[in-house]
Amino acid sequence: MSEREKCGDFEIYRDESDGWWVVYDTKKNKRLGKFIDKNSALDKVAFFMQDEESDDEEADYEETGSVC
Amino acid sequence: MLNLENTNILIFSYNGKSYLYTPETRFFWRISNSELCSEKKRFLSLKDLKEYYSEKEYQNILTQMGLLKKRKFIVETEKERASFDKEIVTFDHLVINPSNECNLNCWFCYARNERKKENEKLDVERAKEIIIHFADLKRKAKSETALGISFFYTSEITLNFEYFNEMVLFIEQIKNKYSFPIYYFLPSTNFFSPKQSFIDFVNKYGFLTVTLDIENEKVKRRVIDNLSLVKKNVVKHLIIPVHPNIEDLFILYSYYSEYFDYVSLRLLRIDNNHYRAWDKRKLDSFLERVEDLVDHLLNLNEGELLSFLKKIGPTDYISRYLNRLLSREKLITRCPAGKTALSLSPNSEIYPCSSLIGNKKYKLGEWKKNLSMKDLENDVVKLVDLIQECSSCPIRYICGGPCVDWKEKQAVEGDVNKIECELNIRLVELLIYFIDTVKERFPLFFDKYEKEKKVKNKINYSLDINQFVDFFM
Image (cartoon, rainbow over all chains, first blue to last red; front, side, top):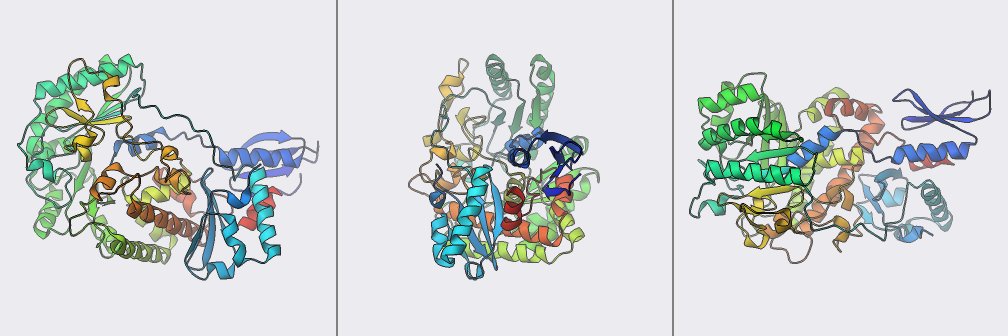
């Protein structure tokens, strides 16, 4: 395994056993995918970092509730 | 092909640091340049930086921006926007204002002028009919989102608590007839003369929001005394209406945090002819107070800072911007007024927002038995991208556009209120500086803040642009 490179909650590293690049979410302790080259792995990290999805519906409602 | 030099971005300097903020993705980074950092500056495109960098350095910046563009951290403002229909498909929040009565006459109350008029009161049975009608319209539209119902935004609830109680019982009776949840909200009170029935309700409800005129000593003392009537386990939230001449913000938050679990400062939209109205000079003075607050907070240790921020309430103007920056939330409109939220006046007139009640320009109609959603079509609150003056503003997705009520109060011609724009952009700049400086001192601070405040921390990457770009090389 190559040295891990970190950006935000995400890490990438090269799995020496097969040469593929792994994208890992350190916050969720979850492997997000394996990519044949580093560039594709970095694209994936950028994609996850830009993800606008929010699972915090309760907070959204609170904001809406306090109209003014 | 994205023209980087003309891309819509915000670059600014504050207190020896410079930052670049990109509106579409809402990422920001610290950039280094001693000359740029030497004084407060603001630029809205990369080409404005040319005079601060050598040709080689400038080309290096363009290369960095090119990489950020390649990974889609910087994107071009979309040319085609989704149309923002006037049609109301559904709504989530109904505010019923049964009266304008109050036992105080606070300078900041937006129902003050209405109160001078003949005091009508919305009949209890009619209020029930209205609730059923709107819930049925929501059901007909096949909406599955929750319906929140609030009362008494234009009057004091404790004067008419029996009315509220009857509404609560009514909502409890009907809510199971709908597939979507129906909630009611206890409104803010001045808590000056609460009756025992109100105190009993609050003790059961578990939450109390008080709006306080902190400059009225008599009211202030009595309200604080009244807090002893409420059980200790009731969450107590204080809203402090704030005008531009306010003094030390840190002391203000700290003092009232002794009595309340949460404190929210709400910046007041004040009539232009009022002596407390906002103008450029008062805005600058207020922003200096916010700068002082930020300076003060940056001198606290990690535990003190977290404790301080924990006690800031959900409707606080400044912390809303902090939370939006941290979560990289995208606001496409300022608020839900007239779109997913509607307000009713005591005489059953419908307005987008309780603050606009009485301003006939914004009256959407009157409640009637055959009222349909089509009757209420309006574009009072516009999609921020469709407001010409906002469409190229770098912070448009953080503020969501102008507050219609504030624009009216400032008697502004045109679509935006420059006072509000300058306030918001300066707040964004200050809070970006605050986030970066806190992260430098306490790298895990905002992860702790995320847990405490349930605000997503999406600013968990290196804010140093060189480090960030290096990772993606």
